[in-house]
Every structure is written in C-alpha cells, then in structure tokens.
Length: 390
Image (cartoon, rainbow, N blue to C red; front, side, top):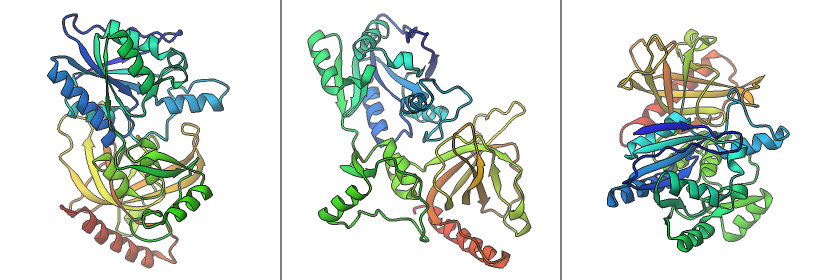
C-alpha cells in the first residue's frame, strides 16, 4: 500500500498526486476513527469496485479528526491545535488505522492534514479536484457522510451533482449496523459500580421507558456502527459491546516505563504505560485483556514481525489528580499484569494493550491481604475471559 502525506497550503489547497492518466480511481474519504465495521464495509466496497473496473482503490484519511480540529478552534478563539496537542478522544492512532486499511487491500492512502482552511472549501470544489487530479470514477460513501464547507456535501447533494455532471458515480454503502442507538448528549465517562461486564441499560426497556431515559439524558439517535457509539461504550466500561462494533478488541499503545513498583512488592509486577498513550483509554476500572509486545530497536522503531509475544493480562486503569496540558484532561495510569510464569522485561518496549472485558470498578481495600485476594480473583477471571473460543 502506498501512503502519501499531504498538507494544505494557507488557502486550503492540496497538491494532489497523479497516479496514472490511463487508470481511474475509486475513492472514499473520512477520519475512519476506530476502523469499525461500518468503516470496513465502505473500504471493502472501494476495493471491490476498484477490482471490477481495473482502477486504483484510494482512501483519503483526514488527520487530525475534523471533530477535534473544529472543537479545539471553538474553544481557542479560532486557533487550530498544534502537534503538541493530543486528541484524547481519538479511538485509534493514524498508524493503527493505516494498518487496518492495508489489511483490506487498499492501493493508495492519502493522509491529509485537516485544517480549517481546507474545511472551508466547498464540496463541489473538492470533488472537482478529485475527478481532475486523481481521476476519480466512483466515490464511495456511507449513508450519513457529509463534507466540505458547512458539511453541505451530503449524500443527496453529491448524488445530484454526480447525475448532473456525469463525471463520476456515487456508490452509497449501508454502514449503519443493526439499527439506531440512543446516546446521551455531551456524555462523560462513568465507571460502573458493579463487578462484571456492564449491561445495556435499555436492553429490556419498554418504549415508554426508552423515551423517559432519552429525555432524562438528552439522548440523541445515532447509528449503531459509529465512532461516537464506540466511544460512549468504552466510557462506560462496555468493552464487549464496543468490540462487537470494532470487529476486534479495542486497543491502546504506549511505551513501558518504570512506575512506583508497588505491584512488585505484593507479587503482581505490572507493565506501566508512559504518558503518551495512543488510542482511547476506557473508563477507570480493572479489565481482562492481552498485552502484546511490539518490541523496539536502538532507534525506538518497531521491527517487522515483533508481535510474536502476547500474554493474557489483567489491566488496571486509574486517574491521577494531575492535569495534562497535552490532552486537556487529567492524566491516566494504565498498568498490565501479564499472566505468565516467565520473567519478562519490557522496559522501553512499545506494547499494545487489548481489552476483552470489564472485571470490576476501582475500589479501596482495607489492606494488602484483601487487595492480593482480589487480584488473584481478577487473574482467574482474566484467564476465563481470554480463553480461546470465549
């Protein structure tokens, strides 16, 4: 897969590459945060049509997320976030999205640095560049996609433009998933209070109860397969529901650093992630999952084939009182206890922490003995949750 990074100029213009004058392109675009099943359906359709028409399959990937850029500007007098500012709401890093896009067989990914000037271009201008520069023959979109100035480039407007010009075709993919869900407006992370995987609060609700719940929480309807829904689920410890939408375990990545080493003193040494964690950190609690060693070399790069080492892990997430200027949020602590009889030294290694299920909330124990007993139970439950076939 060929990856090209593009940065718009001050006027929002992009120097689009030219692939082949004799070969057209099938294109889609978006942030694709999380690369959930809806995203996968759209990109698979791009690859399918490209093969049918002997065309290039092209994904235009926006980075940072448009929602992050516009949200930051709204809170900072129209200023855009800098490279030092971390999008703590992003489900997945760009390199993780690229990994999953490549696995779907895409030919080209154009990573466009999303700016306010770029966003101010009309969808008609933007589509003109894609047809003229990239040779776009087909644009593939999800059902509620919208882009361009004021998000005016929605499916009905683009369909009318395609029909009127005859220059390109629009192919719309059903990327909604199994119906709609209700998500509270401006929700905040909320740690479950009970042990075990949290249930959907509306699972067995009547229509009247659903309406009352939606009114109380100012909930809005949203398609099930959406990055917002995944974020909402992770913010409430509903790991298994989130993973069902993602199509694989939700994961975060970071470098293992030295912590306070209190776990070592009670027989549960943990791999602690440093402050620059990539991916959305679920709400505080203890989870079952896996730790994957991505390795490192002298330059800190991840070598090919370094994912051979993988262990079940009990994962603890907590929040510090310290405020981070990078994320605009309080700092988080992620510790993973690997379930293995081998001694492993991962300091300085990049690792991926994958989540399989919620075990329990963070609670204060009366003493070390009670804590050790609970950690032992967490280990046994982790083994059960991560057992193959579960």
